[in-house]
Image (tube, one colour):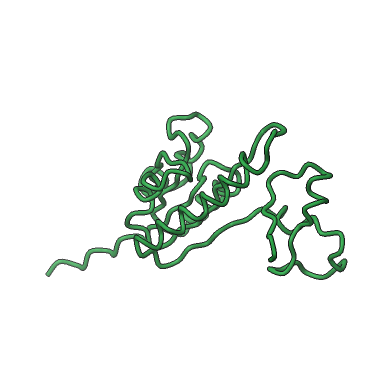
Length: 172
């Protein structure tokens, strides 16, 4: 009787796989035996070469060309995954003229796209990563009190300091 075949590695997707935080997450997941689908804007771009040099990458890492605004590309990357880490978000290199359309819309629409894809593909677990800037700029928050889901950056402080990658919650 043949020995049982090993069970396949759990498969997860990391959006924005070439980014700083996502790269470390990909490294950690590979080291823990996960098969990883990582989305990047261009798998052939040299700035993503470091990913394929990670331990275990040759066997367990697949790079997918995807933009968070392209649901079909996201679906291809997420297909077959048990979990998704949504780390991708616009990070402009230069000062931007219109933060709302250049950062906020893609960030929010991209997050909605990945959540819709995960729902339609019955992904078991989804982790959405946000910027610390979303909660950091609140001068009225008590000093020393840990920040949680009730703390949101102040819109005026962000505008005055030209902080553009912040999701400001609008309360009606």
